Length: 98
Figure 1: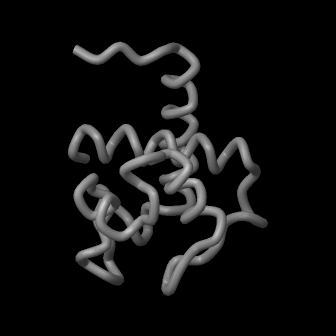
Figure 2: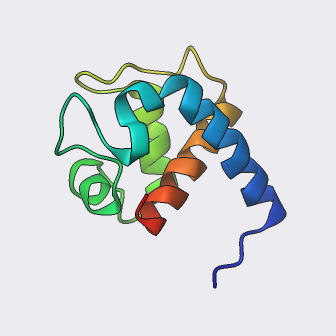
């Protein structure tokens, strides 16, 4: 059993809402409808996000802020707090296997 602090649980809950509104159209269920091998599963994130294995949350934040290839940048659309919350949500789900 994994203990999740109340603060992290709140971030993940808010992150789920932000993900649903901004990310799920391409990444439903942790997948990727545009580039099928670049999912949000832990193994894929480890392979294609720089520094994922050493600082997972920061690697996800960087990707969300800056985008890459078909993925748009969300730096101007989402606040820093919202990006952190969605990164926590993606990380938690990647760790649990979506």
